[in-house]
Amino acid sequence: MAYIKKRGNSYLIRVSVGYDSCGKKITRSTTYKPEYTTATGKAKADSVIDKEVRRFADDFERSVKSGENLQRGNMKFDVLVARYLEEYAFIKLSQATAEGYKEHLEKKLVPAFGHVKISGLCHQQMEIQKFYNQMAKPGADGSCTAVSTIRRSMAVFSSVMQWAVDMQLIPSNPLTHVRPPRKAYTAEQPKSFTIEELNRFIAALDMPQTASYRAHTCRKKNGGSYYVPEYTEERRISEQFKLFYIMAAFSGCRRGELIALEWSDINFSERTISISKSASKTAAGIVLKETKTASGVRVIHMPDSVMELAKKWELQQKKLRTALGASWMGTDNVFCQADGSRMYPDTVTAKFKSIIRNYNAQCPPSEQLPDISLHGLRHTVASVLINQHTDIATVSKRLGHSRTSVTLDIYTHAVQKADKAAAELLDDIAKSAGV
Image (cartoon, rainbow, N blue to C red; front, side, top):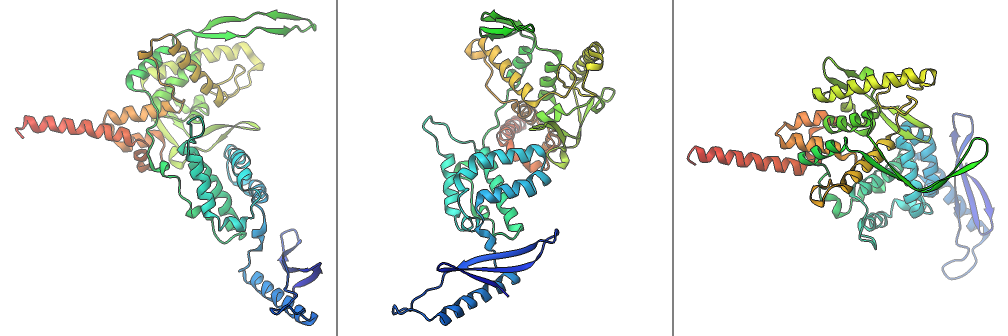
């Protein structure tokens, strides 16, 4: 029987639905505020009000025990997010993914929807749609949120609300009925190098890198200090970084997949690298996780010239390891920090940007490299192979995509360009045949 307690002009109604795994009673509660006057304005008798309250309580108890009632939908979105992260994300998802979800939820979604009850969100598809439409609009500076960011945000939002559905907190996931803004249906051409630009980038790896330092004060170990004026120096890119970028440019691997490589993953006799894991940065440091998809586990054949670079770096690394002795922290990492521990992913990204900036500063505008992301080297591999008429299944396997349709969706522009070239070739054949 439902527990009923009067509180001011309303009634608290609580129903027990059993016990949890720790033996704690599980209850569902709601409040009910009866009408104290009739339609004609007369005060209702206490007995009449008691019957109405009891009828409501009986209906509430019946709906709770039948599973129809989802009163926990009164939980606000910010509370749901905290529960989702603690009880699902950081348990079921990888550490890096969970941290990424947490950051996006706390910075973007909680400020917008944190105050709303999740039961209300189920009926606010139009407001959610408006939120994402607004994200796609250009800001005051003309910039707008990237399509990939909007889709990622929707995926995070949907994951939280679907978990609420699975936990029977709400009846449905409102994100099911929300669509990406129209702009999201326009396929974006992945930014990459052309073959000529790739050649210039590889040449840039042998160019001296200019680094400028601001004037600053340094402290001595004995407590004193000395002033260092502003200065500029030139450095050469290490064999390790050359290997990383050239391997990225010819393997099609993701950044984390290369960072996770160990020497045991490289087969020099067969000229292959084995991809079976990925490295990512978390609050606890660098962690290894499974590849993005099951098809991400693959063996990639590499050009002989790239494997020769790998041998050269392996020899240098062995010398460094011998010099450091017991101070060497790594075990078998191909790409490492000065002490042998695994390299941070952000390091190669920052270095990549600086290489392009340094090269462009020394070249005329007509020969400058486009400002692409490090991931653009992966796009470069795919685009070059497709334009060279490599079959899409081979390209897809090299990239570690789960389906060839994924490759086709991402590289639509390259496929269309290759198809145009094929049509021109067929036209030549047709003309030579007298058509």
